[in-house]
Length: 394
Ligand code: 3PG
Image (cartoon, rainbow, N blue to C red; front, side, top):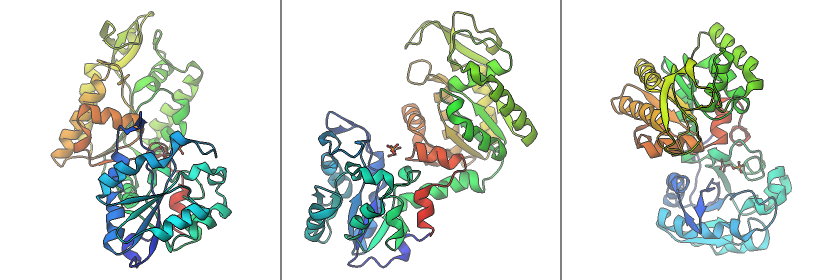
């Protein structure tokens, strides 16, 4: 696909699909990472004499015009990030949008209203995309984190205008390519999260590609069960134990080492600071639940990191949202950060929970790359084609 460098932007109206689906609490943006990460694209278009017109979704309004999901509330945050005026168009197509585009001055950014206020957006309607295309000369997709959606503004529109990838899209794709496409070996993946059933495709793809697969969080309990261990009252999917056993057998054949906790932190209550103790993984008391990996497991994980050249991380190792059950995730994350700082490891992480956990541990800033994507990061790791990326390559 093309990048902004391949396009003549002087005097051109550039429809830029961004993902500014950021968390907002009582009108205030609580994490502006996604906004900060689109700044290079917007600045480069402005610097080259182009006019950026931003298209984005916000939440899931289901085709209804919902005031609390209006993108207007993000204008001050965007102005602060871009350091320039952001004009707002009350719709993403039609009269309101076209008037706003006609009034856009040089050096200004235009933000159009939530694309999902139109039900056709999520149906990948060509008619809606044609309405959008009217306002632009060039299409630039900078929304990697929405590229797993085949929607009018992420897919159909790319087929109507000369198209290119934005800076964030480029950065995301090259970081992921470095981690899984053509990585330095050994490659280690950390996969955590509650359920095996939601990450089957991911596990299946990773065992073919990585040397070590460290499994954490609730899904590790299902694997422990599959090995015949008693996990007491732990979160686990009893119906998935055969599947977990199959995954372990396939990993063995593929030469991928699956790493499960050897010791665990157990408590009787799922709450912060619940009384807890460390036990071997095969001695979880019947009344207890596993809430984190234990110190021996963390030492083993850190040791694997030391022997790895590439790390890809999705999902926390324990119930990281409850102190002190974030300890294993924090310790492993800090080790990965230290090795990355020392130039010994390429580390890539993605997914909403994962990035929150890595930020909380203070490790995120030293990772080689932190993806802005949740679902799209997972689908990429699963080896799936992302429609928004595929459309750029046409
Ligand atoms: C995200 O927040 O992961 C993206 O913006 C995609 O949002 P969606 O899951 O509502 O399509």
